[in-house]
Image 1 (spheres, rainbow, N blue to C red):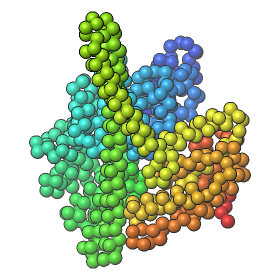
Image 2 (cartoon, rainbow, N blue to C red):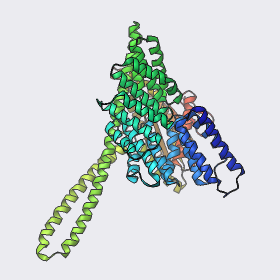
Image 3 (tube, helix red, strand yellow):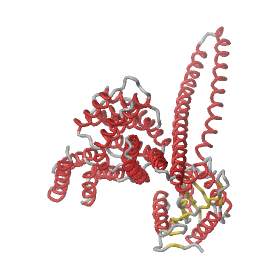
Image 4 (cartoon, rainbow, N blue to C red):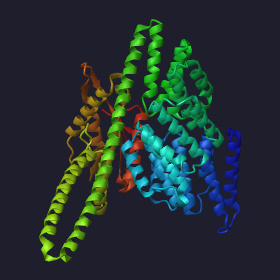
Length: 595
């Protein structure tokens, strides 16, 4: 479907929804029609993402739907809108409650697949793999009324494993989709993922015809720009690797306009970075420089360092050819830093995959142990019924079995204890991980609510931390995080507190029994301590960092952790927008300036 037609469809859907709400009496059967209209609007998101975003906003402005199913579907539409606008965290926050408790089983599964997909975008690979495993265990086969949504789950599994650099697993899930009667859109995505996996595994039989065939499937499906865009990137890389540079450049230049319209930062950044490489090979130096700078600009919102590494390499070569030695050295340093970030990202992916793989194996061992215990109980019953002349033999076998089960149980307990410690404590800072912080904070809030005791939350984020990684590399960033954690830990607290690392450079401190004044004072002490902390690179360069703070408490949100996190996060970003290195309280208009 072309964009104008898609806009007309969306407008018609909204007009139909508004008419149904304004004119139809309750209970006349129009709820089903509105439900169908909202489902058709959902399908528009891959045909014309911009129209979907605009029309979903308009739908949100209408009066709330009358029944639960429609309200939940509207919430899912808004989650998809947030994702298309690049707000992956907000998208997860809106979709996760639906994945857990939506009234419609199909929507629960659809929202669960969506959350897994978003985890890849936010680089939360462990969480994504755990949620994927749960969904796959619950839906092993694509049959019954949820068949289409189960195939979508398999597509999601293929995408996640492609992101984790596991092409064999990605191809297995994608082929499973193709073998089970996919929809046209599912066929488009699955064929792209199969071709991508074959390319990653350097399949010698892969040819341009395979890319063209996958592209035809996407065109026939009326698929939008994202999947065809990534398919075009894979095709261009294939041609480049076979020294067909002119063909690769012609293909990519012909698709850049459509890719730009997708407004998907990672796709756009990688497309411009690859185009810059091809233009440089074609000796179009000025065009290559413009494309590379455009890639770096777009990559600010991309979740991976790949386009930056590619673009900085092109800019280094451009500067070198022009004899600009200083600029060439600067771009070379940035290229090396981006490559280090890529290496770290690969390490994190592999660690996430192995951790969840170990957890899966542990669950299987626990199930096997339970089966073994059941077998032991059955054996005991049989021994009790056996003739006395066989009692000694059966007793010996039972003792051996129980001994093996005890040894196995001890080993499982030891491994579980070790992995629990790894899961609960951030290895770099020594603070609680996000998951463990959530568990501890929830328990503190429950006790405080029961005792009618206030609790304050102080969230802080290191200012310009990305510059440290870009300029000095990831190891220097780690040194800064360790220095900050030591400075925070050194500040005494008069009341019990829980400290957690919520993300890369984002932290939170929950203070039990604190007043707003005490929390602000503690935040100011932390701010000064962080500003005074100093780390050094391997070369001895001193690095200082500041932090922006957001403060809120139960007097604003009640004893609701999600509300506390959201309020403190908004206050934190007001502090950043006001100039950084300061504190903003969620219940005040102005900042509490540092002395």
